Length: 492
Image (tube, rainbow, N blue to C red; front, side):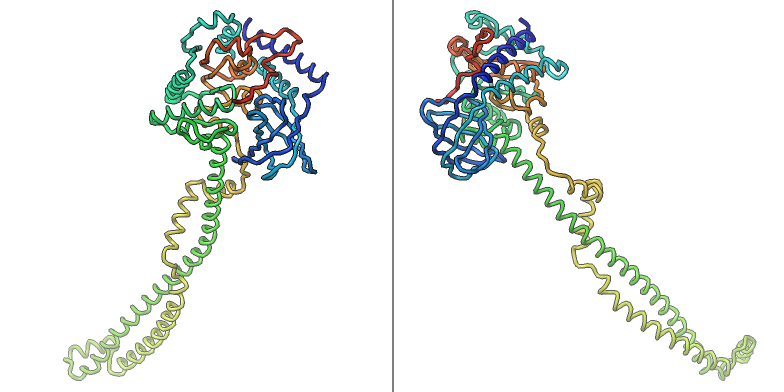
């Protein structure tokens, strides 16, 4: 069968299972007499609930949490189960201690979401890529004996079979580092969250040894189950933690920008007023200079008149006659002296007025030290952002975390197959390479849903002897219940 035919076949089987669940009813709810808060990362909260023996819930199964008190029902996702302890990821915070809750699993809803994704893959061939998926479909339909001896190593499809898990993961880490350096976007799958954490640790350690910063390139979708792997702090690589830190920094930058913009608006009218006062001061100083210049010219003329009057009687006849010819004699010179003195008195009073005005304007035009440089720096920063109008738009914009844009900025996204097949986020992002660890442990519908997101290459690793033991690749008969869809995957 081709990839399309294989997907159609699994859609039919999943729909039959969904119809059976709708007919017989949901899986029975599980009572959890006690629960406790584990930690909060970003907007997600991790809780541990202890259930009675015999309760088994599959990984990434959506559940409704019904508290025993009057608290509203909330939704969560099962991340792990160890014995009677179940770790559930919630959006709502239920408090530090939870006395009693009821876990209502939604197996029908989980299968319905998978069916919807597979139908979308077939209905939108322009958005999903089934070229590499054809090679994967051929592998999934091979007899188990042939798969154990099958080996492929091409630019489109590669198998990495080995019973040594540590060796497989080391090779996956090296390949992932090379692909990141080649600017490829990678979707890394592991069958459950603990294995995903361990694999992310190996990949991150390999990148770190190769000179790459894992925090920049790697993100672990959903909350990590363990705090450290291969010497790396996994909470720092968690998608929610990285996004929370990014938007916290964005909020901090926005608050800093608002503070700068408010300071700019405070300084702008203040300095504008100071500049107006400075222009008035410059104008008055220019007037003072002109008055002082005229006063000095009159002083020179008055001194010349006084000298002429003092020496008039002793001047030679020819010079006296020349002065008289232009109307200058003792009487007229005395009149000139009175005129000059009156003009000097008037100028002197005007100069006093100008000096008084200057003394008044000097403090009014003075700018405190550093404020002008501060204003120019703020003005330059705002200009680089596009001006005050653009800054107002940035400040008025709502901070809506764009999960799609954030995950697209990471070169390697590690997740579990069920989350990839059911989370709406993964229907909007595309990858260049799909790397699958422990592929025989992963159900076929989830593998096919993930393969449709890949444009160039699929790399499958694992121990082929697990195919028959796990039974995840076995094609169920129409109308029978698929083990791959119902068997829980408890963590050791």
